[in-house]
Amino acid sequence: MASEIRRGRREASEIGRGRREASEIGRGRREASEIGRGRREASEIGRGRREASERGQRVGERLGEGGERRARLGEGGERRAREGREWEREDEREFDYGEKSEKGPKMWGKLKKEWEACNNGEMQSPIDMSHERVRIIQKPDKRHYKLCNATVKNRGHDISLQWHGDAGSVLINGTNYPLQQAHWHSPSEHTVNGRRYDMEMHMVHLNENATNKIVVIEVLYKIGKPDRFLSKLIRNISSMIDKKDEVKNAGMIDPREIKIGSRKYYRYMGSLTVPPCTEGVIWTINKKVRTVSRAQVKMLREAVHDYAERNGRPLQPKNKRPIYLMAPDDTA
Ligand SMILES: [Zn+2]
Image 1: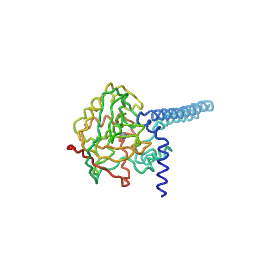
Image 2: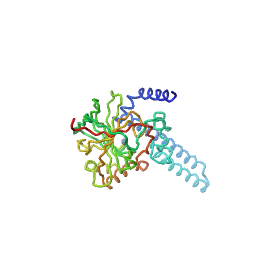
Image 3: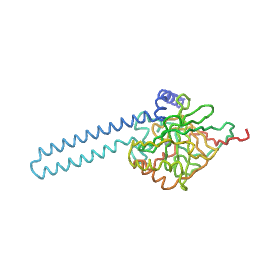
Image 4: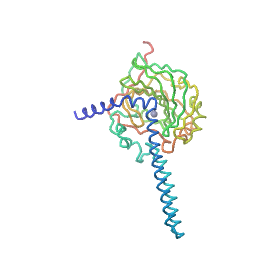
């Protein structure tokens, strides 16, 4: 009963901010403005600290008539200025992946009220894909993607590819979910029968009017031949190493070139794997594991900030959620 009330409350508050969260994830609009605000705040803090340390230096110079004393205070001022700069960098990080970090995955839900679900959600992602049930389906998901203009963005915690305009959609149980963006995690976040892979890509789809607004189609990769889709983006990605919020025009990018290569997939209900960890996400984990080269994984890791070089969230409790292996019935 208590847990039902809790769930009811949580759901109500989720519905309340549903639209806002949806556009936040799908178009990165709110996320971008939050990051913007975060950076503004960080730079204000940085400015505050710089001003403080400049004041310190001025005071030091005024007071320090004896050479030794002035040197000591001057040094302190310099040190404070240096720390100020470090803090500025530090503050720009909203969350990170350090196991013991105070902004690490175990703390996400405590960093912001809107991120609560990261800690107290009951259907969080990722989880291990060890299915108990196989569902033979007559109406598999249908993907209809289109060539569309896109940009590559360094979001600090990952590299994302954002389509601008109609990149097509996926049809799931009669509901159409337009494709918004794709991004990469390494190592993989989901595991299959306990095995963690080298990389996973998330294709994020959004329908703000649907009950479950977000669909993520996921592709797993192990080290092997280069991934041809990623090869196309190499120049853009390698030009934004460690440059948070850097955006590059990638030109026309065809989502159909993302090789999925399997009609079998796992299906379960989960959440976003980064804050705000919004639940009600329909997950599609393709069974076929594809390949990526070591150099490509290295490039993706170098491009993001140090705190997200390994940007895979740890496994979350399954809480008796069903996981289905969907096997399309071709004879239907
Ligand atoms: Zn993701």
